[in-house]
Image (tube, rainbow, N blue to C red; front, side, top):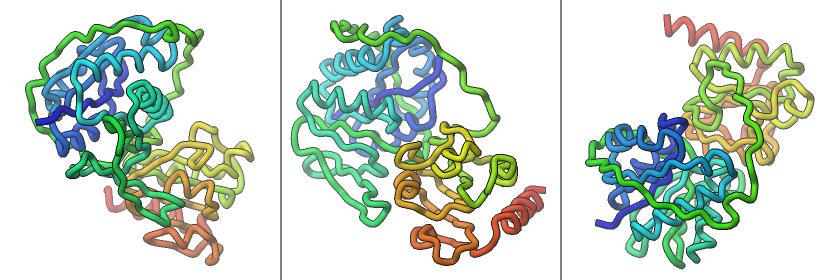
Length: 320
């Protein structure tokens, strides 16, 4: 059976959820071979094996932490040359898409980004993408070289499928460009206790209708009752009501949760571009003509300051 190369996103050996989803998709196409790089790479093996990795290629070098992107591309290219895979899968984060694009250029292959599903085809993997604010769903495949595909978080379930997970050391030779951009400092992100926005199964977002930073407490209360992440529209971020790191949209983050709740968000194309692939979308807006209602599965016409607290209370009551 063909082998599928899976780039592992991890933090000091703790594998992040999007990688486990990639392993589920990789098993549809062949035998997953995982590539884990940097500090704690070897510690990922048990988790990766539990979720279907037949082999785990690891490399630990200071370059992966000290310099941006290129050392990881060097390593993924080395893994590609060792494995000769039928496809390369990478999580669709900002860094993941840059790694994938650079690899595709190096190996002379086509690339598909932000896939939301994958299936095996007669001529290679077929990727499903959502385009033009969810107006179209496309299916496409790479027609040149080995497909390099980035997949959005929450595109597949995490499924246990124990495999050998044999750990192998990956020899990496870093090129001249690897040390071109040095990391000079890192600042840990302040923990809110909520899920990471791009990986969350549920996202509750607020927009212009929240009408002030102090009013985001209403949005946060609903999010916390659901165990959700908090998002914000560009209008809310530009007004200084919520951090840019929580912005959902074309110039913010792209999310694809199982449930997306938009409160006080009109639904401009800029915002829709960042959440259009959500599985179920609920909108709360007092303007019945708001464009967001053209996209949603469920819409509530009403004042968010009346609706959201009632929804929070109902969630808490059912939990109790």
